[in-house]
Amino acid sequence: MTTFSAKVAWERGEATFIDGRYSRGHEWSFDGGATVAASASPHNVPLPFAISENVDPEEAYVAALSSCHMLFYLWLASKKKITIDSYVDAATGVMETVDGKTMVSRVELYPKVAYTGDRPSREIEQKLHHEAHELCFLANSVKTEITVRID
Image 1 (cartoon, rainbow, N blue to C red):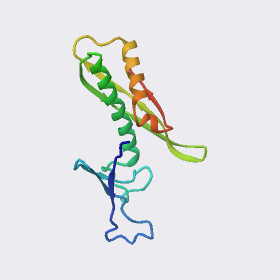
Image 2 (image 1 turned 180 degrees about the horizontal axis):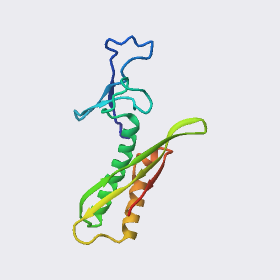
Image 3 (image 1 turned 60 degrees about the horizontal axis):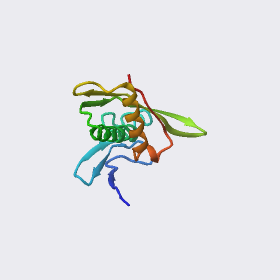
Image 4 (image 1 turned 90 degrees about the vertical axis):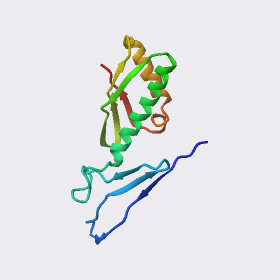
């Protein structure tokens, strides 16, 4: 069994708090030393109480799913001796109410992959993306519908 951890820290500062007029800005700290400025999404909490330039949990969720998929795709391609020069995904997530609960119901991945030499056939790319999706720990952990859209 493997465990993972993150420290999430918030402080009230000068805000009165009980009137709801407090900053949602906080920090995420990880064991490798990275610290990320986080906040509630301005889609959910009005400015200035949300901090639009900070990462919000919904964005981080979409990024984590995309990152997990990419890492498995790169690994699978390397095992098949397919050299990848770059991988860029403009992933999107959709938040909506389903069965009375608000959730990120769908995430769409839009990977653009550049290869050294000939590009693999569409069939091989689709197979690699399918395998990457099946292997992704995070995709296996959520009920969000995840779709990979390749050109």
